[in-house]
Length: 314
Image 1 (cartoon, rainbow, N blue to C red):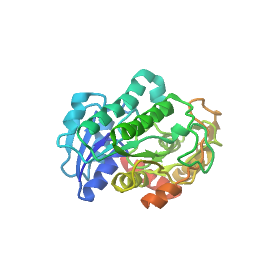
Image 2 (cartoon, helix red, strand yellow; image 1 turned 120 degrees about the horizontal axis):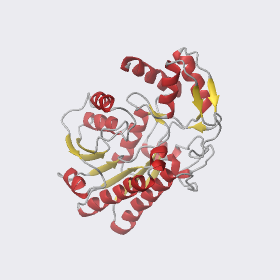
Image 3 (spheres, rainbow, N blue to C red; image 1 turned 135 degrees about the vertical axis):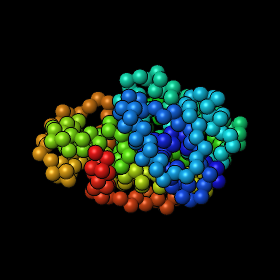
Image 4 (cartoon, helix red, strand yellow; image 1 turned 120 degrees about the vertical axis):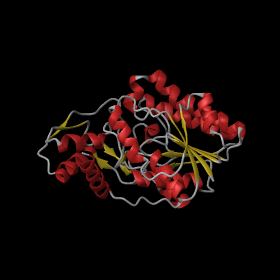
C-alpha cells in the first residue's frame, strides 16, 4: 500500500515511516525540515540522521503542507492513505506566532484534504492533540466536550472539523488521533520531559509549572503503533485517544527523572501556566476495543530508555 506521511522527518513521523516500511508498505514523506528555532542546525541534521538510520528508500518531497505545488508533488504517485502529522509542534510556538501557526495547522490540513478529494485517496489520518479538550479530568473519552484553552488547541479542533466536513461533503474516510505527552529517544530538547532531563543531568534546578497537573505521558513507539493501527484498520470515521491511559503529575515526573539520573537537582514549582490546561488520564477503551491498540511501555520503562539514549547522544 502507498502511504504518504507528512512531517515524516519528525519525532513521531520518523517512527511511523520506519514501522510502515518494516511492514512492506511503499512510504513517501512530505516535510519542510524546519525546527522552528528549537535546536541548532547541526544538532537538527544529526537528529534527522538518527531518526532515519533504519529507513530504506523513501520518496521525499521537501516542502510545506500549505504549499499546493509541494503537496501535489508529494501525491505523485497517488497515495492510498495520508497520515498527516506536519504542523507547528507545540502550543508555545503557535501562541508566539498565531497567524502563521493557525494557517499551518488549519490551512495545511485543508490543502491536503483538497488533494485527497481530487485524487481519490482512500483514507486521511489526522494527528490532532489532547489539547482540543482544554481542561479535562481523568477518564476523558473521545466524545467529551471540547473547550480548548489555547490557540494551538483551537487550531487543532478547527482542523478536526475540516476533516469531518470533508467526509460529510466529499466522502473522504478518516481517522482522528489525539495523542498526549509523547516522549522518548529522538525527541527535541524543548518538551517538558526533555527539559527535566537536561536540567537534572546538569544538576540544575528543575522548574515545573503546576507540579500537581497530570499528563498522560506516552512513549513514542506506542504512539506510532496506535497511529498505524488507526491508519490501516477497517474502522473509519472516528476519533481515538492514543495515549498510555495512565497520567503522572509533573512533580512526580521530575522526581523520577532526578532519581534516575542520580542528580542533586531540586524542584521549583512556579505555579499554573496560563498556556497549559489542567489535564489527566485519557480513556483509551475505544482504541483498545476497535483497533487492538495496547500501550506496551510503562512510564518508568520509557524514562529509562530515554535516559539511555540521552547519555549516548551526549
